[in-house]
Length: 239
Picture 1 (cartoon, rainbow, N blue to C red):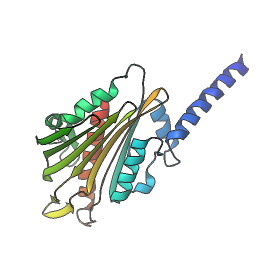
Picture 2: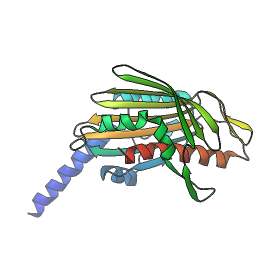
Picture 3: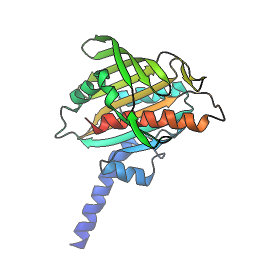
Picture 4: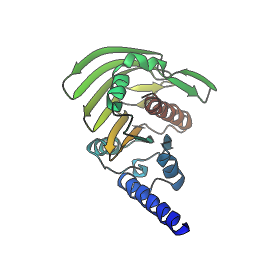
């Protein structure tokens, strides 16, 4: 009986390890991997693209990685979660609906470390243009985010039967305390969903190519990273 239990446990660990090896690299810690395999949402502040913890196991994840590597961000975070396909067959449609409804971005709760209170991540959201075809939706919106003001935002959503890709990019310069901290196209948030075997792999990554202003660096990092992590986490938690 003990031998049977040992073999069953060994086979289960082998299957989990083999499955995880298709997705993650050695940048993921053991504790992070344990949490991911339990279905928990894992948020990683990774700073540089060399610390990305996921492998390009799907076309959309590959595209996300290349987008962020090309950005050369000074600040970077990723969000990971695995959920079962069974019972979530319509996940792509649910997520696409959340992502397209930019007016509802205003309701995303954001916790300010500086003020120790919750605020709306975006104080206003105005959809200016939307174009749709069979697989790709492109949107242009004005999203107002304190302390950066109104962000002229380009959004692309691509979906097929096996996954979804979302990319959010600023089209204007962003300022903080009078300093330009992100030029046009230098802040990106990417969300991907990819099906692998009997699971959906949810992956979000966001970064900013921002100058290092020594007396503002910590505040800029907190402002950018917490907002990017909040956005990705919100969509994953509310699908």
